Length: 64
Image (cartoon, rainbow, N blue to C red; front, side, top):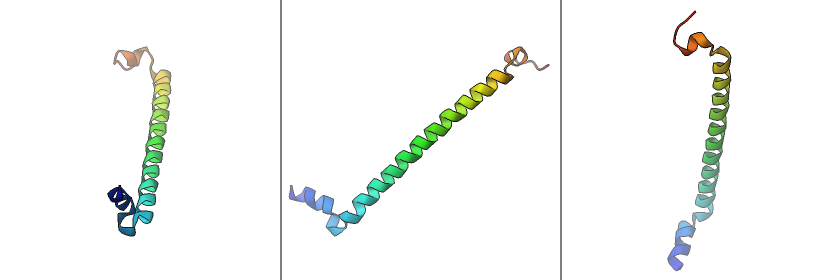
């Protein structure tokens, strides 16, 4: 159990290392959430645009 406490203490630098790990993890999670939100918004926009522009001439590959 003593070695686990030493691991978390990290030679006296644990008070600096662990908050840095936590802050980095939170930033990565926030970036992931923002990226997913942006991607879903773009998918909705593309689907809406395809619905507006997707007439019969575009469905079979012929232009009018």
